[in-house]
Image (cartoon, rainbow, N blue to C red):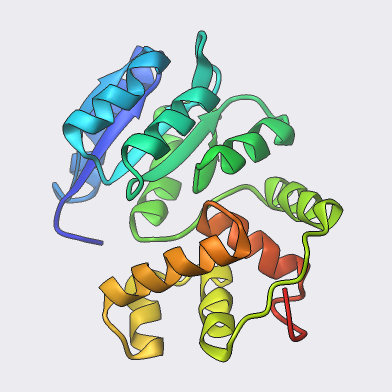
Length: 217
């Protein structure tokens, strides 16, 4: 993880926000800091434009315009930020919708905010995090969609395999013997080629293809 991670929280639960504001810096030795928060989904886009965060936590069950619209606005305003959707709703369709809107991870909100810490730390270290049942739903959605095959070269296949395995940018850079900046560029190109908006969707696509078992995806 980088030496400083700036976090914005979009959530209308004051207890969750205040606990994360206190706990995240403590649990990460000051590396992660909540720089701003809002309980208004319509303010998310302007907030991230101002603060330029590395990671944005967004509650899906918020008053209109709601969390999905907030994700779309944040993705537009801060294309490099990692977006984490959160919800106490166990409906996988809502989480899949969040991933399609631009979220890169999903955390179920169960109980105390402290229970969010361990998965959040994994996300800060570059992992894509979601419950097993949600991953199954994403894979099922990808199977039903049946997109047209995409031809990948050897390096693109390797990159997709590493993404599907949850490798961090640094780990991918070491494996491919390139810089982290080059990995980010290659990943952005791969996502466009696969017609997906996040690493999570790319991983689901790789799973549908048997982790690149054939000549196309």
